[in-house]
Length: 453
Image 1: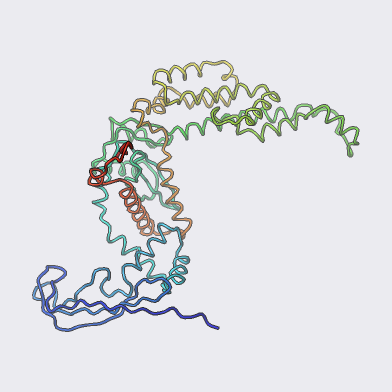
Image 2: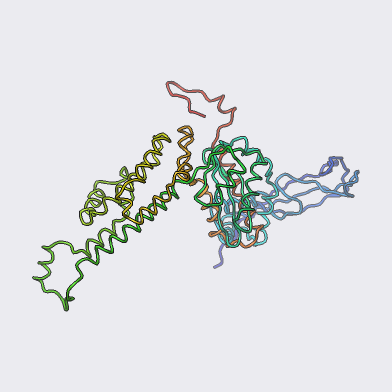
């Protein structure tokens, strides 16, 4: 038996007065005819039809000979209302659906059989409604003075992105053919020409940024991302651990190899002797992440594992001490002078100089580069941004758009989705921030304190 057809609901709307203004100049024209057409609307588990009656008017201006009246919420010559278009955009941007799932959801919920071309037309329609100049002015009004800059590689193209981590919104983007000096310089100059004068700029350790930032914003402090710095240093620590672990696993392999299976007596004797060097090396490598974990994040059981690792391999105490002192270099509660003194003391320790991988890690903490790592210590406590994680999260969201919906190949497709995503982000920020009128009307009740704006 075929599935039951959804019930059809017809709504009649009329906009055909005797006189109607021209949509371009506003001069009123006289009606010469009426036209009726059907437009599909949204209705859950129903088929909603709008019988729209509009008037055709003889123009009394030089814009055109005739024009038709328009109804709010319905585009001229459109087969669907704007509510259908908005529903498609919400499922693409908010619900994370791809094109096929949007078609299935609209068919299931509203009985609409939408074509691929209509879905792409919805994106173009939404982009044409946006006012990018208004968005730029809004970002200038709410800019906190801290800027995070990063790049995202999308196939053969690169997306340059700037965000505000304190006010929590994207600032601007540029889609370029390659991530080189000229494109980055043009991107930063455009930000400067738009009125952005940041006090702090946070980037990763790319060699592309220092000279350009000093040229475009000479008075801005350049903050290197602490997350990337610690990631590179911990990689050197793991390299040193790998050398020690392999040396421990090879220890005691001399002599003839045992053939055949061990008897039960031999197995019991081995158990009494304890773990072999190979077992100890395996234990250390299995729990290697504990070597670089912060002391405050270690559980009592993880502390026992870490002590057992050092009992198996005492040389790990040097690596652990090095990691703890590196974390102390970036303590946000210290002063810049204290951080420089700690760096100098760490660089002069003989135990670290004896391990080549730690020497390579110390080379990343040279005084000139270390000054950019601790630039956040010169900012007020509430504005101490040490990483560019904010722009990284925005990059992941853009990457999610690319992976979930479809592979982006055209420049127009990438720009369209990024523009829509930035505008949706602004709408969420505006909804989260109370307006000035709402803040004035809000009064504390009883002994409760008023919330900070």
